[in-house]
Length: 587
Image 1: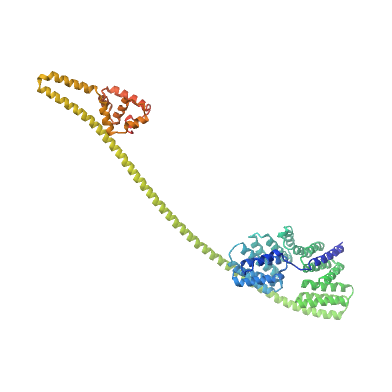
Image 2: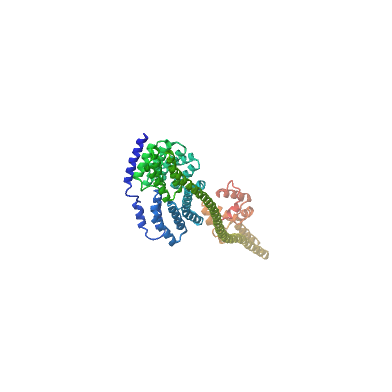
């Protein structure tokens, strides 16, 4: 069954090779957007960035080099801090993909240093997360797995602030590699399976996820499961480099399982079809392992030639670790077939190379320790710079707060002063109106009192004239005794005449002179009042007593009281406590 599956995979590999013979292409829409923005400004930077991101998503970062170079040129022209940091990130990633780790580290550190000075927004957070992600992946490639994992954790924490699900998936996928290397394979498996369940647009290259799962189960010695995920990885390879790497991993799994025949077929297919399109390490491993496997059954020059080719490639690519493993394979083969002279020569070269590698490793460990220490210093410096930047921002905010508070206080004070002025003006107006009203009321009261005094004075004058006339007639009687009877009779007649006359016309005349609108207002409210009741109202308006009224209209006081009671009924005051005189004073 497994051999049948191998044949199917090899056929699929041939189909994939045919499909990719024209090379990798980016969508026309991205190129059109670039053509629409020919000026070296932010718009062109954004168009270039979209192209670089597309290359990065498809793991073709080296092909994006011309676009990265242009962003670097633009950063030198427009002198924008964000563009500078972005250019350093892309330059670092490009050097990383070319295995120039020290140079890549320098550019990535430079980019990270600029982040605290950028405006704090989602764009800056995304940039920071990408830089931290690249640093984490770089440290993992330098075999500093713990340091790499720490930076990937920071990248994930930063990315969650902007909730970029695709970037989160990329970071989590990268985290699976150091987890595998530090023995936390189950966590690596969980991360990969989690990201495989996401939608296509939110999942990074599935080839990497399946390949990491295969490696995780290989580390757990679950080779059958590892082979299943290896097959899935091959189905999602995006280029022939991925295919060659995947098939190399597959052949290594067959060796772990003890199926050397399947491993030999796989290596032969790789060397026949991918010889010029392989990852450096994949080509070396394929040459060495293929030579070793075919040399196990019978020693031959062909087997040694493959291993020697692998050694030459390892020297050419500068990978002493794989060169040492190639010599180890030769040593084992020579010993197995009892060729002791070759065994001794190969062993000497192996030991020499091992010692050299150990020395280099010691130096590398020291160098890595120094890099780690330097990076921690840089990180601490960045933290302090960020705190300083935050303090400056906080001070600026406080200054702005005090300025705004001062302005608000001034506005409030002015508003209160203006409001107080309005209140004082209103109070003054109210006071003036009150004084005017009091003056008007006082004037009306004075006028009313004057009218009452005038009316009483008129009545008094009328009485005085009558008494004077009667006194004159009585004096005439005293002077002329012969006319006593006649004069007395005239006096009596005058008294009777005065007694029986109410002189309403005279009274009304004098009353209307002092109260011109009294009758008009009274009849407007009570149109059914009789002339007698009207005149009675006038007497009461003048504040005359019941006795005075009875005397003036020549009735008894009891009759005057009855007249007052009837008047209250006509004025609808029956059952009310309001004084009749006070009521009529309103008119």
